[in-house]
Image 1 (cartoon, rainbow, N blue to C red):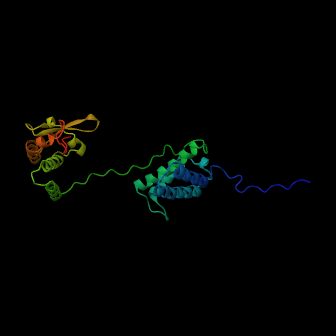
Image 2 (cartoon, helix red, strand yellow):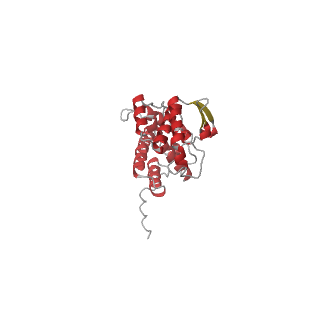
Image 3 (cartoon, rainbow, N blue to C red):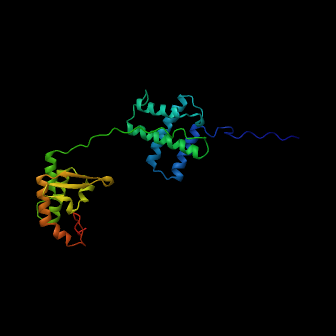
Length: 239
């Protein structure tokens, strides 16, 4: 007698590139294999759930059916907002796009889809803001914080702060100064910036006096503790 046919397994025939399934696999991959932090994982989950909603609204049935324009439209929707979601800032939208790009990269590498269609979609760049300058009163309090006790370290700190304020140097440029970079005859200093670029900038009278005071009353004492260096600003060990 013929045996009765076995019942079909639950889920048989489900597409491997079904978006929600791929998202689950991707999040599992991040948690187990990549060890992504719980907060980051939760943020990715929120962003990808919104992406799934976008795909469903667009009638996209599978990840293989996603085009580059689909991902670009999702980015535009993030920035514009809708009835359920306020418009996202550039940084928040960028985070969501990074999650979506990661999803598609994972799917392509795992052979779920033939190509990574999100590869060329770039997260929005946040607006570049001008640096905020502190007030003159705040500068004076900062300089006073270096102290007036005449110790080598106090004299060094005041000279360093005066140079930073008086030249507009980056901190890396200031701590990288050599004694020979100072031209007291022309009240200027050579700053060595990124990529080996040099620039000559004027030194104000306050900074010049503070550096002179440091060179005469403090640097020799600090240098005595070290092995000798041409750097202008030394630490307590002469380095």
